[in-house]
Image (cartoon, rainbow, N blue to C red; front, top):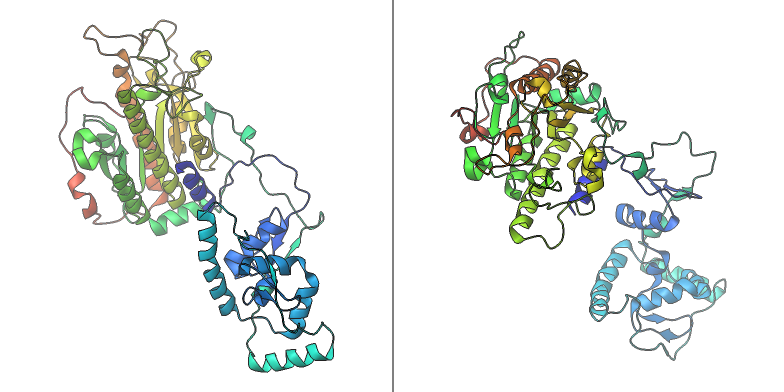
Length: 511
């Protein structure tokens, strides 16, 4: 359900989502709004919802009786089905009576809903006849084209001068081969590999809001009212962390950026990003223009590639079961659920910032190709992440954190939104972002320390060099996007989230 909602928001901004490959012989286009559909039935469904279209037979089904062939049916729905097939009966009714008004047809359809719900509650379809059709006595209507039919129609036109026209709202046509014009961008699932290491930009321009500059920059200038950057999953505050570097960054043009570090270890309940209330609150702040950027690395414990390896923690996810391996212990299942919620949080924030013209980044361990035979689980293979990296303003950069001073090699991938400066900095460091220290220069983050803690905990704090690279990229985005503003203050919505307590060499860090 979350993925479908995510894809709907992506498409609403003009993004193209992968579809199943199929050959379509013809496409139907609505003449009123120019939307295309795969079949005439799909066009009719759209016309009914968007343009008030109703089938013609409904405008001549007043009750349950057909006065042309003297038959009475169990429900009005059954009469409608009869008139659909009995073209002579429908032609006679059209010759003798004007169509019902649109308001009358809508009212009759609402009454039919109760009958439909009652039938479905018993397991039947909407057109099920629980009673057989019966013949009735009485004179039948004069046939179409006769003098009697013309006189009857003239009298009814005087009695009901307002005739409905909703049945005329099915306005569309089948596209001919020469009418199609230039083909639109079509993506198939096979076009998006499970993971990539490097990508300068995606191909999805959307409706302009997914661009790196252009319309997206103008939208940001009009929409974003405060230069506030939020570092989620930041861990405890430390000297030379991302918050510290951004807060003390010197802007030549006089810009000012406010930074918030958000984590449960800092704000307790307010820092709980796994709750739906927190997600809604932050999304509203972004929509209202109070946040210009955000980023962070969600906890990777449940995704760790060290889990399938001998000596590591037991695996709780896999490539086959990315949302949790069946029959794992309850404690492990809770860890998986929280990890998934936190990942969905930052992905939702990332997409909304892409739409509003902001900047963002998500950091996570690189896809473990060395453990491919163990069927590892990775966020980079998730459908949502594969969709995000198709955005034109999004780049993907993989690197080793040792180039920024990390004690371990720590292969990492970062997906960044409107932060090209970050990618350039990484690729200019080390060996095009990779370790240049030689073999056996770093201790592997595998196994346990003497105190029983897993060695992977060492890599949870960003090295100062990486913090500096991210901070400079964010500063570059602010300088090139916004004008300097005098007297800027932190919006009062965030007053209770400010934390200035530092710790020394401690904390979960960004992951």
